[in-house]
Length: 179
Image 1 (cartoon, rainbow, N blue to C red):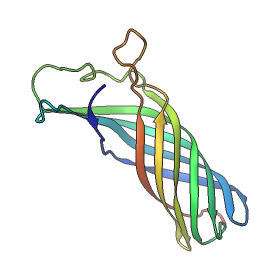
Image 2 (cartoon, rainbow, N blue to C red):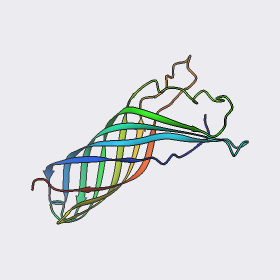
Image 3 (cartoon, one colour):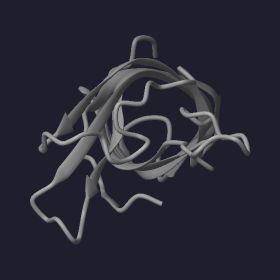
């Protein structure tokens, strides 16, 4: 167990959404994204408050989401509540470590290479969408639970679990390509 703080990282990309079913007050569809995302951790040491270690890991992520929205007028303008859920895959691009002391590495994760460069898990979110004549504005809270570990975790290995998890707020702008 490593005592750590949340690491604030960059997360952004492009989104494509297809609406397959349009009902009076509900729409169903699918959404796919291509995102750049930073994960990692920021360690702290209670006995040594001036020491710190930060690891930032960069990924390209592709969530495949089912999209369900409810609102007074789900076909055109107005405010809708929506839910997204589905699997997500990610590909490790590289990482960066910051250590603010010069002594030798004191923990097994310091300097350790990522052993599994393919990430997969489940993501889900809920939010509000405001549809206007110039596009759709979305505010979403999203959670990602990683099912793969980036370090090996057999009984012989040091780490029992090393999967990513993510809680974040997303702001999106979508435009209609076809009506």
